Length: 261
Image (cartoon, rainbow, N blue to C red; front, side):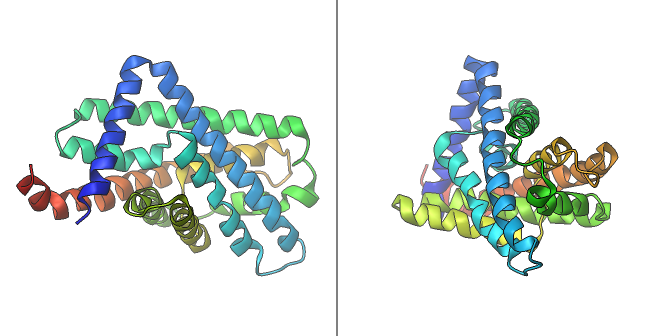
């Protein structure tokens, strides 16, 4: 049974609710921090993958997928508040009647807004460095970002569902193992799975799109393209976290948890 890791998820949700009640600004800043961490991962992944992309190597995407895991590690240990993970944490706490649904919605909103602001802030910081302005450096990222805006809405939704299912597992399953080494390895593996599979993560996409615009590349994404992607992906992420993670684990563990209470 997953009683122990689920109890940690519940405790984490209640801790974040306490933070928000203490100071909504602090909570918002933690959400901004999560996007900044995602930004570091995006830059490392696409700059590393770009070396292979320029040589038309099939290893461009696998290398990017492997290095992007640094973002999740930073969030896990650095205390960032990511909307996609919150869809799991807060829903589970609410199903357990430890958190009111109105608080769930409020925290989701703050997380998403903070993540959005963090994405814009990171893009501005990258633009200021000048390190990602040359097409020889940003072409891989721009190409991937552009491709994301051309996927049909229906497909984006289901890619979002599967993505957050894996991402939530990347945060959840490490609670079942001891030692930082196994935890980090597990997180990198699950992030590699979602990245290499081509699934869609709303917050990572916001960061990627923001950087794409900041590069001022002629093939950079448009606002219309971003909206086309982000809306169905966000809804899909929400379903992945609430239904396939929170509701599923609540239901399959409910008899055993209640028997011990």
